[in-house]
Image 1 (cartoon, one colour):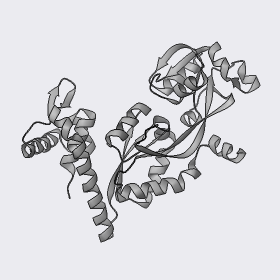
Image 2 (cartoon, rainbow, N blue to C red):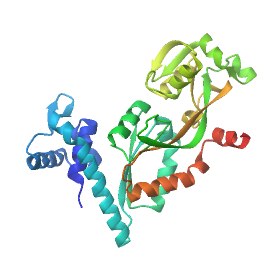
Image 3 (cartoon, rainbow, N blue to C red):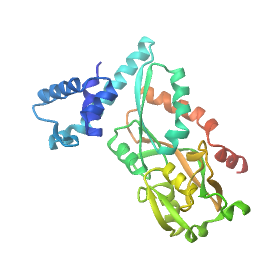
Length: 302
């Protein structure tokens, strides 16, 4: 069963762009436009209006959006069950992921899974924690790799814990003692990555009551990393995020040591496709072996 017209509608709705939908599905923009027009003809009303940035849903489009998500999930499940019956394993999975897991941990998981399941396509949507919660709520992804979203309608399972480290410019006095006290974060110019988006840094500062002297804010952790290297301040982030980065930044543990749990989240009660089930089983089997070194060492100490 062909689901392209439903995917075209949902991608255009999610990205606000027919061009992006065309690129992701491998069609021309005119081909996507014809699909949308065909859906609109079937339904008897317009789904999108155009604006300077692309397209946005009409009120009627917003009303039918969740139903089209259900239709697409059902078609995928039917196709995958049919593939199982005929012995040809096929399907697709839509994954949401926080930036650090998408960049440093998830690629090896996807590669390992697809080497065993070459007929299953994995689509990745990388974003911040607030956006991932929205993806889960609207069920625009099959699952998310993230910190605990704290949503009653979502089932979250911990995979591993990663240590939060303080980033310091080279030659910082704390380098000699090998750690920094948590309260000392208030004494130095601080560079805050993605403030107010329920990041690991936001949670650490809120739970500890620490109020740093924020001099700069950034949207990208690598920007923060380079600003720290330039001596513009200090910051805090996961060891996972920067484990493959090179440079002069000094990365030290905090005292007391701080950890953040990362896991896999799925909407509760959602019908899970065979491809999604296979991927989750693979991740649970292989994920603990691929946990960050800091998390593995912590597991050994516990």
